[in-house]
Amino acid sequence: MSEPDWPAGPSVGFTLSQLGFATSRRFGQIVGTLGLEPRHFALLRAVREADGQPQQAVAERLGIPASTMVSLVDQLEARSLLERRPHPADRRTRLLHLTGRGEAVLEEATALGAQWERAICAGLSAGERAQLLSLLRRVAANIGLADGELPDRGTGQRPEPVPGPAGSRAAGPGRAGNGPGGAGR
Amino acid sequence: MSEPDWPAGPSVGFTLSQLGFATSRRFGQIVGTLGLEPRHFALLRAVREADGQPQQAVAERLGIPASTMVSLVDQLEARSLLERRPHPADRRTRLLHLTGRGEAVLEEATALGAQWERAICAGLSAGERAQLLSLLRRVAANIGLADGELPDRGTGQRPEPVPGPAGSRAAGPGRAGNGPGGAGR
DNA sequence: TATTGTTATACTCTATAACTATA
DNA sequence: TATAGTTATAGAGTATAACAATA
Image (tube, rainbow over the protein chains, first blue to last red):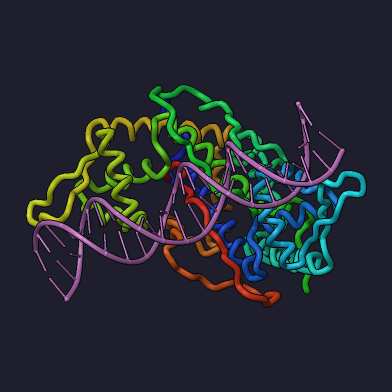
């Protein structure tokens, strides 16, 4: 079997895992300041993006199971950040709308996200940051992560086991984790 | 409030979250090929690093609660990848040792990790990869992540809420997630 | 008969607390 | 009395399946 042709030292994969985890965890704490979890933030953004979508459409877009979506919307509606309105024609569906307060909180959260972004990139010149993003984009392409794509939640989806060869043996659980939920784009 | 002074586009924070998540998830699938979860891999590596440590010492080093450690070791011992041996002087403590099979599997997993690393960095020159690592290291320093440091598991630890200002309101849950568990350094 | 949203249920994971045997 | 390891237990979180209203 071929030896790694890279110089020794920390791997990109490990570093990315570490950073990605720390980054999103910290971001979770930050939006927690507003009483939000990252997925609440993601949900609010999805709703704002296209106000008045059916609840399920948003759930599908975010890759959240319908039942989970219910409690998520419940929580945000209880805080008057968004509201369910009846569909004019179909009495089964509920259309999601951002409230004024929801917009305000979303803006606050977005500002905190921007602030966090600046903290992350402190000391990097604009050029360095651009290059970092460029390199990350190439890595993303390597691992088959489309540009704006959301990594599919553990909803089944089963990509190819392993790119190259393998050492056989049975397949294990293969666990997942919590989604990124980081600051927006 | 200050506007982001960065050019528009995807943020580093979001991209890192996304990549870190995708990376570790994929790595989980890869080692799953060997019937291992990432934390099994981490455990095996920690044991190999210093063969014959007490079980709790390893647990502490990995930030795993003692009770979780038990089942983890149980699983690996059931597969004869490592074994508990009595401490010569203290009959309470169990010393962890890698078996021959454990070493073999660990090597297989390491090889898969190296292969995954190559896939991640495909198309990057050695210089580009070095620069990527350098930039990531600077980002890691920015967010207060020591070099080889393991991000502390949700074991309590409560860092400062937010670096800069804030929009008040009560503190939310602030959730965590699964650790990196990516390929080794 | 199919679909939207909801509720109920069952499962997984993890950590805390209780317990045993040693020290 | 304190500690290593274990077992039992309880909580959070999440997905699957059953359900009611409507199409």
